[in-house]
Image (cartoon, rainbow, N blue to C red; front, side, top):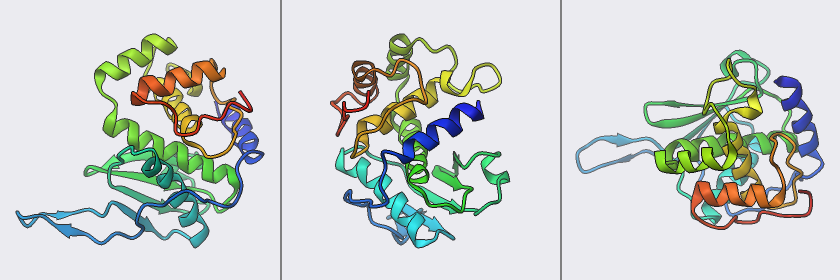
Length: 209
């Protein structure tokens, strides 16, 4: 599983640049209070994130803003080289009290790490927005058996990982060769993005697929 992931992260480096030019969401948004007095979490929060990692996260979330795709409240947490919070991976998405938390467990802010943040942000969008009907349509289109069961299926065979990778392809603002999942022709990726979002890809470059 991790050989497949490591190979794809290295490939992503060839297609991502260190300049993140998409329109960003507001960073470090303050908390707000509703009429009932309940304090709402910030839309985008950074915990211990170096400035270059903030730039990568802002680029990733900005692509969703450009595509008019709503994200949940997001919290990016930087752990450096401590692998445990990410379960041995360079990044991990999970939810805590209705906030999508993206753990970052690497000290190298590379092009591949920017792609990783876009992938994990895609998980946040999917968990907030994907209906049961859309998930079922995606299953029929792609043929996966397990949505999220890494003990029963290899990483790239899980429906949630296929969905996140297809979101990356549809949103990213430069050509990217999609090797992390199978069924990766341009038409297959395009069909997957439309099934997930109900709209055409934001970019969906066809140079590399």
